[in-house]
Length: 220
Image 1 (cartoon, rainbow, N blue to C red):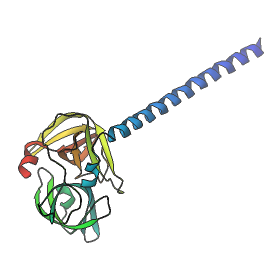
Image 2 (image 1 turned 120 degrees about the vertical axis):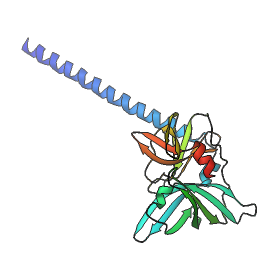
Image 3 (image 1 turned 90 degrees about the horizontal axis):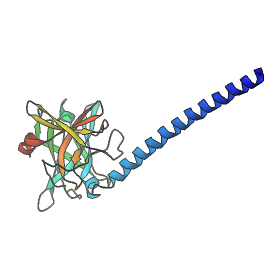
Image 4 (image 1 turned 45 degrees about the vertical axis):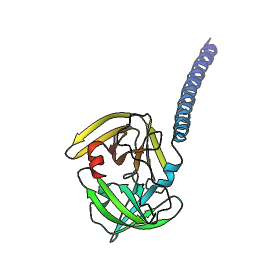
């Protein structure tokens, strides 16, 4: 009888172990499905968007601020282009500014306009080879894509729904339920057609914030 009880306990422990194992496998499967869904959603945004999204470097002495930006316009002769990014990359001063596109082309840039309250900045570069994206400040399309190059130059779009708006003095932000990374600031928030809807400026508790609405329209 004692041997039977010991075997029963072992059997129950094994069942518990298998249950825990199955739970872990289920969690892993759900994570993989989520990642696959996000990758599939990335495929929904026009590929031309990536060629217009760039890295932005601001070197001031020994300090360097790194963010992202988006080519939003260029002159009819193609000699100048306008890159939209965030102001806080230049909060501590304007130094040697360089913009780098995914094809490896690097351009010296000049800060021509900024708005600290809306956290927006505009840079002029020479001879951009990429085509600018269209701007659509108001869009109700879902999902949205917050795109940038992060801290290490790896392009990624955080995909998710808009979950609200926030207002502060001089700034109107739209909120995306998916966090961006350090280095994505200044990158664009795009709708599914590849129109720029906002400019990323921050993240908190899994929510991405992007300047949009009236302040962005007035800045442009």
